[in-house]
Length: 160
Image (tube, rainbow, N blue to C red):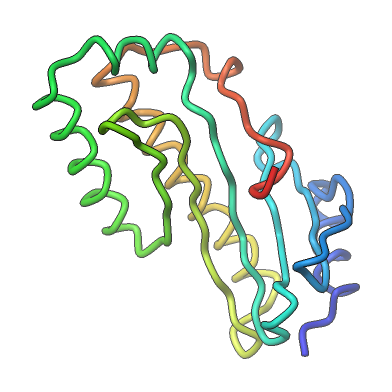
């Protein structure tokens, strides 16, 4: 069984622990600030006592949604396929909300199992998830115009 206190202590030691939030579907659910200004979740699902999930959910900026909507159907489809194929190479799990091939939100996750959980792997997992998020942001910028990174909205939780 994963030691909740140990995970919290590692996060606190690095100065990234923000809060523990109530979550009926989790044994524990932490919100972290990693890197500075970016919200991520560290969750142990209730039915998975030997695993934690690192993840982040990101809303696409309204300006980019407008640009996506104004694009041709072929450009929208090509973008979604490029995003899927490139994210798959990161060996991350991801969910894309893209009704009508118009990306509105994406969730990136990484699982770490108990036998591989140590501080090093936890931090590397967080970096990997952030790199996946950054990849999405950069592809959006390349295809639909860059925006101020501080205006990108992280949800307070992957389940919010």
